[in-house]
Length: 245
Length: 245
Image (tube, rainbow over all chains, first blue to last red; front, side, top):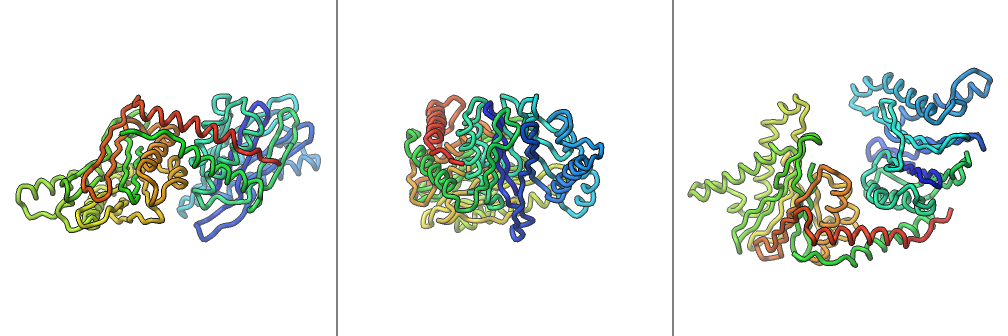
């Protein structure tokens, strides 16, 4: 399983992913799920992936093959040279669709899901920061001020805190705390979501990853936040008024 | 959809259910999901149901038919005259299994899930209070001191608070608050779980329903709890230490 969350607030973009994959509870591995492409000062794109690993790795390979070919002087449209973030998302969605078409039926015949989804976030010079969610069929949606965040993978445990806290004008500090608290709730309730975590912050109009931080098992910062949240929740609960029946 | 939760603590049993059913978002109805049988001073049993309504109504009909037949002097084993709560759960599980066998294939051919689950809770004179979860196959599990609660239906949004708060020695007042807060989180995040709510409290060794309370839309008590919880959560979040990266 996987849990990834991306937030688009006025101050910038915040992205957090876990790194656990599993094919059954007895087949657990660590795979990075957050990938970054930068042309510093010009364009930054971060993609997070969930679902079938053979599908998402296939998409990433095609993205990188395009970029290598363009770097070698070939006339190839890539997520780094295309005209907009919207177009970059179309390119990625197109690879997703093609891979689904290629693999879906054979996998379904084996009883295996080809399901996959992605979050694409970033900004190019001259454009605004954008956050997209790409579905298995290759179609996609963009975040709005009403719904400034997307989640993929095991999204339910970590959604209530985002619903209550995240607004377009939320500060970057609070948005970082919110994704970490959201991940903390998910880690507690679903064993197939696991440490370490990858956290990226893309400040508005910087066209680069401002902060990229790997939170390892035992990270003191995260442990302190997690334990403070546990205490605060229990305290908040104990202070609730009694329900008179 | 449905959300029901049952807690077995030292002080007694607490049960809470919503009342919304839906076949698609455009076909929503209100159906009670909590059912009580009492022989005051002798035995009390509460059943909560989730999943396909035709299956769960079928099980309830058979339970009530048995009881009517026994009341008419026939020699029928029922959940009210059988020797233990365990045996009562076996009877209910047997009806579940028989109905699944009868309907499952035809429903699957129509692309409809026959999935269903139930929580059975209660106590008979001479026995301890017990809490069971019954699966679609008719098999069942019992709560333990390690896991003193069961949920059926849309369980994820409301689980974190139960995980953090519920222990065997939790007070009845706190257990009532916990199921209501758990339901409140679920109501916010899943539109197919809806008011009114049914809340029952069975105090230990009373062999009857101590409290049975229907919480209607607009209930002041519930609105106050819900709003206090929102405020407390936001306050707890704002008080968290910053995450230094």
